[in-house]
Amino acid sequence: MTPSQSDTTPALPQTVIVHLDAAVAPLIPNFMAFGKEQVRVMREACAAGRFEIIRATSHSLKGAGGSYGFDRVTELAASIEQAAQAADAAVVDRDLTLLGVYFNQVTIVYD
Image (tube, rainbow, N blue to C red; front, side, top):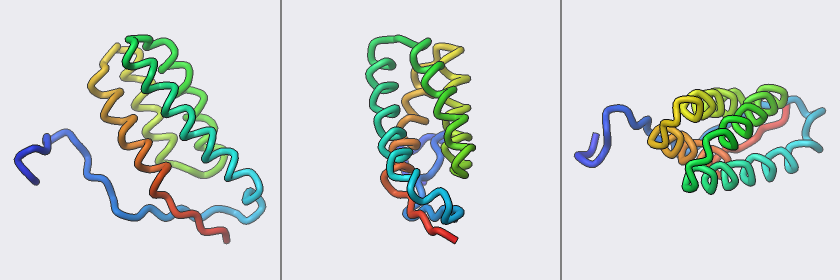
């Protein structure tokens, strides 16, 4: 761990691979675009202290992630939702960073 890392900050993986059923392949580009847009919306809401927007948006993303097989999206969105309910901007910001990185780094393999 570098001196600038906190003990509570999870490491960001270099590569994330998700295996999905080929039947959902046509839906995934829209889901990925939707997810990235939701991260942007929640970042703006966090900057404005609008935790109810973050809570509702993360709740929706939590369900969508699970529906498509993106378990990490569901995990991070659940954490963001809980942090928003507690108005914990630091945790929201940390997990939004992780979620944004996830959406940019995930590699999808269709089986």
